[in-house]
Amino acid sequence: MLTLESSWRSPAPSLRTRAKIAATNAIADPLLSLLARSSDESLIRLVSVLERYVARYDAHKAHLQRLRDLFEHKHPSLQLARKVMTQLHPNYRHRIITNLGINATWLGEQIRQDFRARFGIAPPYLMVISPTMRCNLKCLGCYAGNYPRDTDPMSFETLDRAVSEAKQMGIFMFTISGGEPFVRPDLLDLYAKHNDCVFQIYTNGTCISDATIERMQKLGNVAPGISIEGFKEQTDFRRGPGVWEKVMDTMDRLRAAGVLFGFSGTVTRLSADAFLCDEFMDMVIDKGCLFGWFFMFVPVGQDATVDLMPTAEQRDRMRSMIMRTRRTKPIFAADFWNDGCLTGGCMSAGTLYLHLNFRGDLEPCVFMHFAADNIHDMYARGEHLWDVLKSPLFTAIRDVNRRDPNPLRPCPIVDHNEWLEEALSKVEGVYPTHPGAEDIIGRLAKPVREWSAAYAEYAERAWNGPEYEWARTGSWYQPLEVEKAKTRH
Image 1 (cartoon, rainbow, N blue to C red):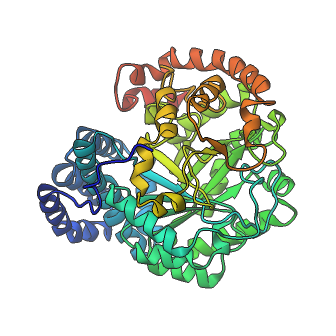
Image 2 (cartoon, helix red, strand yellow):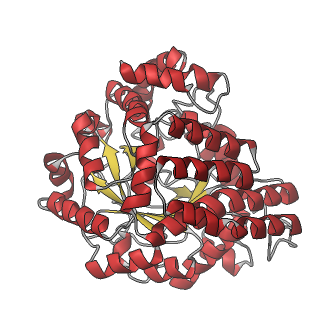
């Protein structure tokens, strides 16, 4: 295994970075006082302060300039910001500034840049951890359904070390997946110990007690993303009778407590039309969701079949819908497969994120169920989490995951399945992390590639059309006047 230099054992921010950290912390309190006043003017002033005193990179300044422009033009994002200020408990408002705004975005970028300058590889922004595969539901086609569900091989101590080492690389944003994370009560202790981080939790929403909500309220750094399949009919069909009502009740209790939460939707051939109607997005906004993530079904888990994948036409409609939603609705919404124009393409293998599964296997992606390294073995050898970034497997995936100049076809699993097969064939010691994982480049390869060819026509037409001219020319965002024109139509 290729490891980083032995001197990299207790990394710390440079003196210059530490000075910037101290300066930024000094203005945290004034920023929080602005948050307490949720008028349009105070929100615009808040963004101006961040733009002037916090942003140090062109990307950050561009984001903040764009946000200020949207606020000044009464874009729905202003309404979303007001909801953040009025709907959330003060602990959450505080952590949005300190953990998400300062640590994950600004401070994290400083540390990641230091790391890259010293060792020639950039750490990702995000880490996904699946600390358990235990779950009280058995959803149709679950991407993690073929993993064993009886034990939790990864101890609290290993999780704690992994999070600590991720922070040393500049990662303060974590997604917790599974399984059902809320079946492990000790995870709340992990979130409390690392109270300088943000933890977004993907959950089925049926195991969140009032006591758990009370503790999340006190922490302020835990944001559940509750799985939903559309409306009652679609949710109970895939997840089981009665799940819809439990999810609706959980959302009501989270909102009453001022907890930041959102939804997670798996787009299948059966659920796509429910997600595509305006009534769905209006419903989750009314329930109090402040964010929402869409994930296209991919045939990598339990009873894997391409029959549940959305059609090429449905995926294209989802792509268009998510852009329209961001123009017209007060919710932060994104699509893991259709928003490659915002991330530059595929995020896997440490490009922007990596995945640590419940056994300690380090996978390039949550949906790419292959590994060559296990964190327990790495720790036993005296290695560290960051060593995987230069591993042959992660390097091979990064060599192929951004070949396509069209970011609307970013995925080596389903958009360019042959590239995944190519990358895996070049690395010795790669193993599937559950029985049947190899089907994606075996028995399912032909139908997946046929599906990809059908979608390619939609993706090429969209990417080369006027809707994405801003992205093709290197702009961060679609011009506001174009957005307003599209909204009117």
